[in-house]
Length: 327
Image 1 (spheres, rainbow, N blue to C red):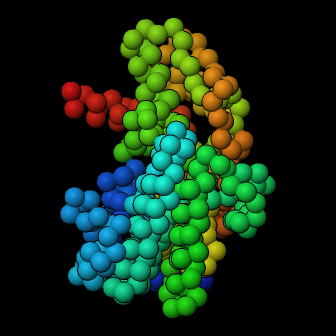
Image 2: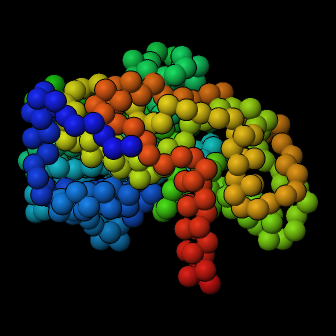
Image 3: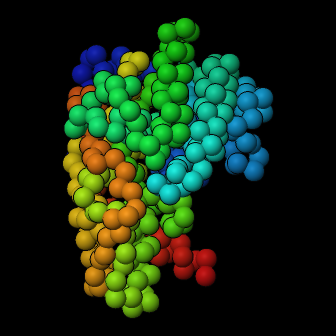
């Protein structure tokens, strides 16, 4: 379903992102960044990127110099150090410090370079472990965080506050958004650092390939999660750049969740695995449930277009193509 036509009030907000704007996408090779590049290019904007080998976004001086030279109209901060429960729990220092450095460099550099718009992308993990469900944006900083990703969550919370502070102190229309769990082409399938959905795809694919009778997964399978295809996320980001100008973050999700056990069943069907699934309850489950309240985004006319099973099948096909090309 396409987004609704904006009313008169929305038309005035849309002017915040000029047509054919120059947009710097920080983190353009990642899952989110690559989807943003596709969406922004299709919408007629000029996308500016810089490879990590040429620019370390943790380096504030070099990042600022690059942005002053590039002079983007808008910046989307999709660059981050990301990973699943194991990676977050093993490397909390890097998840905290790398993300803080990236955010400080890019946001400050964008403002110094005169960027008129900035979208900071956080994560649904910024919300308390036992937040009300669905989670409204107002739940931020109302309770303890999930311990296994506390360092990453605190870095992202700092990014939300940084973005809001630039609005208040300098009057710039910078905004932030909190995506739910994302997946799609460009995802990370490394079993040591990946999120749950690509990890499940790879585990079940390899089990089918090897004829393994059982796949053992972490936890109980009871936690519930919401999943959004990254192309739907990119569409929502463009909509926010065009229409939203507020200091409160905006949740980006699909409004539906399922248990990890149900997700595993779906992935096993898509990959053609017919063995059994065992659950290692000695491993952590993480937050019991994370479902975002997307009322604020829906009011702008957004609806996701890609059903979960269809999106998983497409992501699996993409990964198989990439794996074949590398072999």
